[in-house]
Length: 216
Image (cartoon, rainbow, N blue to C red; front, side):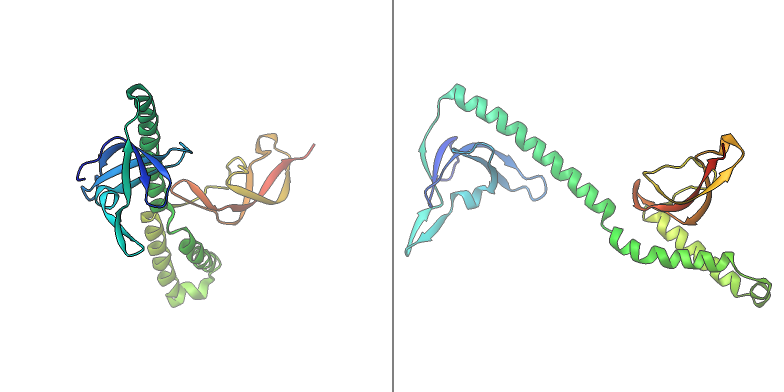
């Protein structure tokens, strides 16, 4: 049998499956057979047509992997076909989204190793004294910091704005409070204790901050 009939097939191990339709794999142009477990319609698989039609060896003899048993009633099959097609399309869309998310966030673990180094360089630059400026090594740190910043930006990393911003518990962690007589400052960030970062919009390191609290 070189063609796929729509209907019920028996797997060589005994289970029965309903062939729903065939599709063309857009990546390798291979024809795929989409089929469903007769006993559990939530279980749907896709297998290459070549593998679906091939023989397998059982006790030294070649037998079909799937053997056609019977056709189904047209209307009943049509309903099952439409439901399965919708499920399959949803699966394809979800798979595409999963691949996109993986590509966006695959570097997260590595970035978490490098970001503390970047923070330490910025801290060293911020606390440099006059002798460092005179010796000229400060310019070298400044250049390395810029390289770091540009490389992180190319990877989709952005530093979270903090000082003067309203405290955002989704992106920041309040480690202390500072009293203020200005009611307008209540709930805003007074100091940044540790920088925070986002990767393509996802917080990978919350900023640690001090928050103004209005003194009543």
